[in-house]
Length: 235
Image 1 (cartoon, helix red, strand yellow):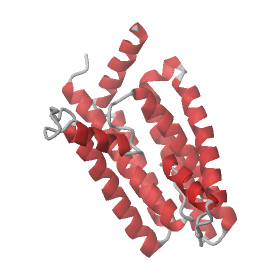
Image 2 (cartoon, helix red, strand yellow; image 1 turned 90 degrees about the horizontal axis):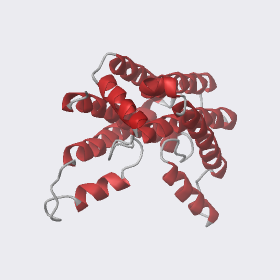
Image 3 (tube, one colour; image 1 turned 60 degrees about the vertical axis):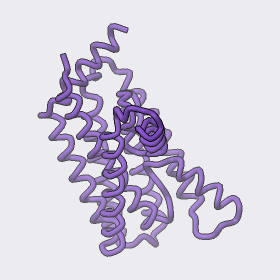
């Protein structure tokens, strides 16, 4: 049976992925034409700005990100339905992310400049595909307040379930952790993209994803995932 230590181990893995989301979206928004590849809400809002005539937004980039993210989510959904892989799904998603983000870093490095629209769109598409897979798999885990990419519901829960609101603050720790992780990732990504360009922060992101995959392989989180898989099978 999984215990609290197993769940905490999984939460740490998901916090690492949340940090990576902040880092990657900082690179994309600041370095690839105000486009998001992890946070699709942002892309819908950006498209709305562009439709109203606001300058400086990439309609093509946002549309590519949205479309390829959905393709990645379909792929992630298909992987989720391979029952024999159930306990390894998160590891597969993380390693896919490490590989695809690494490829995106290579494309950015070879292009040498964000002004190359072909390379820029390729990087956006590669990252969006990886994020689509990850989001589909993490969604399937169903861990409350740990989507790894969006914080609106997390922040709502933090406030609505607080003692000030008459709640019990049961999951305040993980909610605050998610916000802090996203913030740290965004700060790091912004600092790197402003001084080093997109290739280096993407390479760092790929390396961190690979490290996260290794940590997952040897962590107690696998026991929690296995217990969850058995519970799902019984229901």
